[in-house]
Length: 252
Length: 202
Image (cartoon, rainbow over all chains, first blue to last red; front, side):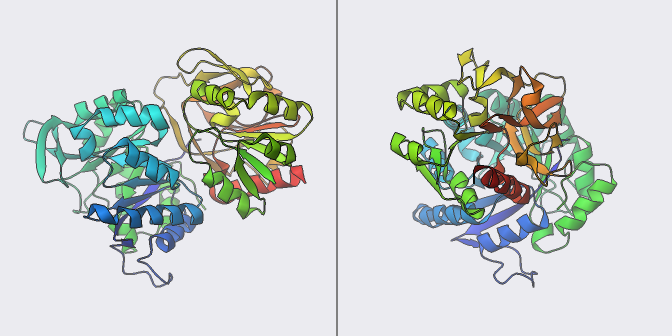
């Protein structure tokens, strides 16, 4: 049986993981390779490394990190942040990443999804969408880190992304992100029933029940950052909890 | 030495690295002399079936592969590389494969399932093989594919995964082996499978 995936997301700035201070059992929590290895040992199903380095010149540091992660870790990982052209895809894939996530750059140039899918395969193209509820009962697509409303309907954009060749959609709800009161269940349920590609829920995980709920309404994977980085939810415990809830998961 | 066939279908370094984990030394190559010298050949690959076959032709590798298979050298295809081992694929048309294992590659077609088949799925053993030593139904491996193999003879399937159908996960016909999932991305289970592969060729 195909299992539901649990995906820790690591923000990387100038080659170092930004969050996560409560790890006493790893020597260097700020090293993306060490933290990635730790999560992999704990049973994470995939990892996402998000490059938040502002300057373009520092991209090379990040490519080096991707190479080191690929050497050290034997689970799939996705790279996001600063990907704006097909050449960026090629660089991180050749450095050893399995998937590449695009967000604002795909909104600006939707053909990027098609070009990357044709060249490298749909399986490595993840369309990441920042969505926020409006007062008309739907969701708008935001870009620039959630600061700018594009006015595009998030569900329509997800469908278009699928048609363009994305292999997966990561839906990040701005309303629930950082609030720790659960994922946006309605949005995830809608997308999951409308799309035929897998959905990764993102934004809002605060307790183990939140993961169970969003996976039960149809999300194929659940992504989270702070609850893992601050050790509020150990992945081993989360997998056991989900298993007890009859949700198929891979346990280590 | 294991030859990892380089025919421009994605990053092959991860396969190379994972071979190193089990003490196998890989060489990423399209040089026929290296294929001759290799103890076994791995055919990796991601992307589209027809592009992959075109590239094998472009680099003039098909005759070499045919000869090695005929002579009994072990050839293992991974992911798309496994699909190429079959007679033909219906991915975006109808294309001939290498025809080492009788059967076809078809698209998942069941209501309500997500495509690609993406993520960790457990293996069900279909028949005995040294390839699945110490592997059981609690063992999960990482899949990502939209098309799957439909072998003429299901006895060529060593292990399968349940995903709307019995998806051939490990296939073997004599010295030709295929893994539909990515052993190099399948954590400790992948390590065990590559260890089994190593024992087979030594």
